[in-house]
Structures are given as C-alpha cells and as structure tokens.
Image (tube, rainbow, N blue to C red; front, side, top):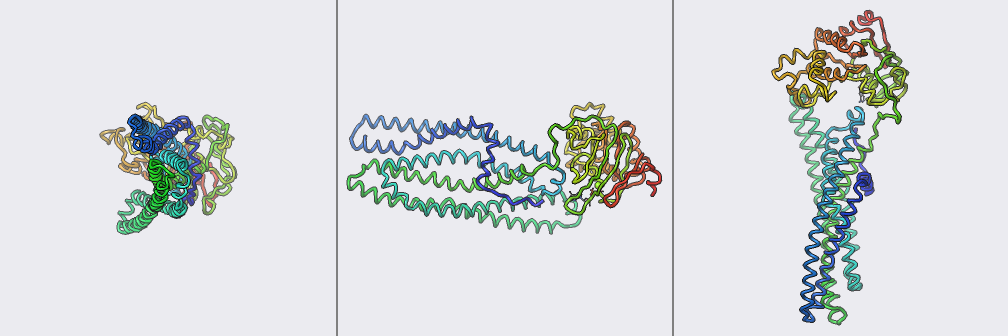
Length: 567
Ligand code: ADP
Ligand code: MG
C-alpha cells in the first residue's frame, strides 16, 4: 500500500491530547515552575536600571548592596527552578511517549494480513522507530522551551511598553518584514521536511526489501542493480536534505538579522530622549537589555519551528497508522464459545482482494471431527478460505458459521483458541526450538512440549541435534530446513490443542512417506479435533474422510474420497 498523503497541520498536535490527558496535573506543575523561573530571568534588566538610576547615579551604598543581593538571589533561584522544570518535563514526556508506542504496537496487532501484505515493511519500521524517536527528541527539548520563550517574549514586550512605549514602537518597525520572511521559509521547510521523511522511508524500504530478499539478489547476481537503485534513492535523499538545511537556516537566521539591525534605531531615538532629559540612563540601558533579549526567544522560537515542523510530520505519520482501521473487529458483547462440536459452514461466501473475485458464493459444510483435505491448484483461493475461518479476513458477502453461529459474533480470543491455522510458510522467532514451540502456551511443561514435538514428527530431528529442544532456530528460523520449520510450527499449534486445526500445505517440504506418517500421528494426537489440510498432493487426500475442491472460485465437498482423490 502506498501510504496516503500525509497531512501535517498544526491540529495534528491537538491529537496528542489523548496521550497527554493522564499527565495533566504533573504537566501543569511543571509549567508553573517553568513560568516562575522565566519570570526571574525577566527581572534582571530591570535590576540593572535600579542599579544605575538608584544606586550609581546617587552614590547610595545601601541601595547598591541591596540590589546586588536581589540580583544574586534571582539568578540562583532561576537556575534551580529551571533545572527542576526541565527534569520533571522530560520525565513526563518520556512516560507519555512510551504510552503512545505501546498503543501503536497494540493497534498494529489488530491489523489484518491484508494490511501487512501491502504496507511497505521499511516504511512501517521507519514510522515505529524514526518517527516516534523524532517526536520524542523534539518533545523532550522543545515544547517546554516554547512555553518559556513565549512567556519571556511577552514579558520583555510588556516591560518595554512600560518603560517607554514610544521607544517600543520605534524598536518594532521592522517586525512585519521579519514575520513575512519567517512565514515564507517556514512553509517551505514544512513541505521539504515531509519530502525528506518520505525519501528516508524509501531508503529504509529498499534496505528491508533487499535484505529480506538477499538470497534472490545473490542468486540472480542482482547486486550491482540493487546498489544502483540504492545510489539513486540516496542521491534523492541527500538533495532533499541539503534543501532542508538551507530553508532551516533561512527560517532561523533571516528574521534575527533584521531584528538586530533594528537596534540601531533604538540607540538613536533613546539617546535623543536622554539628551532632552526625557528618559534616565538606567531606563535606556534596561530597555536595550530587553530589546537584545527579545532576539533570543524570537530566534529560538523561529529556529525551533524546524524541529516542530519535522515532529509534526512524524506525528502525522504515526497517527496515520492509528487511523488505519482494523478490518476484523470483535463486536461488543461477543459470544464465548467452547470446542467446535458440530460443523464449520460457509454460506454464500464471496471475497475479492483488489483484483478479480477469489471466492464466489461458496457453500460448504465441514462436519466436526473429520479429516478434511482441501485440494486445488495454486492460486485458486485455498489459503484465502483458511484465512476466513480464523478471521484474518472477513468475507465481502455471506457468512461462516461454527456450530451454527456466525464467527463474527464470536469472541476473537475464543475463535482463535479453538481454530488454529498453521501458515504455508510459518514464521519462527530467532530463539530456541523450545521457545518457539511454547510460544503458543507459555506455561507448557517439558512433557507437554515433547508430546507435541513427537506428534509433529520432530523426534528424529531432536535426537540428531546435540542441544535438542535448546537448539537455536536462527533469524526467521533460517538455520533450519523448510520441512523442519514446518514441523516446529506444527508442534507449536498442537500444544494449544485446538478443536479445529487447519494446515496450509504442511507437507510441501516433506516427502510422501513423512507426509503420511505425520497425518496419522496427528490423528492420534488429536482424536476428536477437526483436521483440515490444504494440499495439492493426492497422497494425503487418500486418507482423508472428505475432500473439498475449489475451482473457479466455487467449492464443493465430496465424502466419497477414493473417486475424488484419483480424479
Ligand atoms: P492458494 O492458497 O490457493 O494458492 P490464495 O488463497 O493464497 O491461493 O490466493 C488466491 C488468489 O488471491 C490468488 O490469485 C492471489 O494472487 C490472490 N491474493 C492472495 N492474497 C492477496 C492479497 N493480500 N492481495 C491481493 N490478492 C491476493
Ligand atoms: Mg496457499
């Protein structure tokens, strides 16, 4: 799936509220401390006015000592409060972002295989890692700073107005030019940042694709071609990055330079007021100090917008994942079920992916407790039929019933406990064989695990391995053969003792002999369960109680196995 266009508006930040809410009290406290500390910073230029006008120009020693004392206390207290606010703030923001990551991780678990088949893996990784990281980085060092800078800015303006409002008007004549320049470059920056993020996701998905497909790349000698693809995407990334740099510099530096130039006007007008005895020297000194300080919050705020713009893009990309609805959802008041005792029935089931319909009006009843084989050439929809039974997908039309109940009304947890699907190419975690098997049932005893392993035809392999169940399976199980991976996954499924077990081409990597052995030992291990085996090999079908054949999107079941198997 090509990700939809990311809309990164300021209101994206509003959506953070959901995650902020649990921390409002702590956050308000942090903000109050921060405002206090900023306020202490604001009084310093005023203290210098008192120093000049009340102490120095009057030769007043007592006032001098007093003023020096106030200055000292204000500085130290401001410092302490500042540290306290930053520390508490980072604590709160880290906790909040942790909540967000967990919520995202949970949400991703509800999305269907259809989503994962289409969404680029590299893009997903970049959203989970870089984008959440970016939000964390920016929120850790900028948001608090936005607040204190705004307070500082407003405070400075207030003090300047109070000291001399005419002088203030002179000092801000160039501000509109400043703002225009700023807005222009800021817009540019947002657009470029979004582009940069997409380029980076392009690079990431190329990595993931090439690494996952390394065997194909190597065997087809496509290394050079892949390197060229990488070079192209990397060039595009670097070009965009340089443009972001320029825009970011202009956004920060241009308005600052204009403001500094405006200080000369303050010198001229303020000096003239003093010559005419309309203002004290201390007032002008304090005023210039405020004017100079005005630059720093403005520059910080403007410079920060690049960080905020980039975090906003990241946030939008994260929320886009949150907004991807789960296709398969549990209804409120879902019904609990126990073992499937009667049948699994398909009623007028139709399903299409984005192309032509795969299943058309399928009607089918598989009685409970039988060994049923599903036959059909590759691509007819066998795996799709299996996905429907465990609700990895829901049908577009029609319904599927377990013991007469629509599986959409059944609790998802119960359904997936009773009906287990063993994938065509099962996934193993990079861990030991034991850990992979007991993943299905964390508290499983060694005896249970061994029984499952035996029923899955693993005992021969385990005898051969010096470390037995403690052998490591390698990344995605690639340190084992395909057949071994399949048998481990089968043991994992058996451990759960489902009442319906669906095996999707479980024996494609096994010879006919082993295939039959496993089929009979399966029956022995699960005497009452419904076994549904998808296969395109007649050997398994011969020992089945019933055979389902799929053709042109339609399915039919035959209980007269011999004639069907040999047809
Ligand atoms: P089988 O297991 O019988 O080989 P599948 O059920 O896997 O077949 O697929 C049936 C058809 O649906 C195929 O033509 C396949 O290309 C298509 N298909 C499977 N999964 C997807 C998907 N996620 N998106 C689009 N088409 C799909
Ligand atoms: Mg298949």
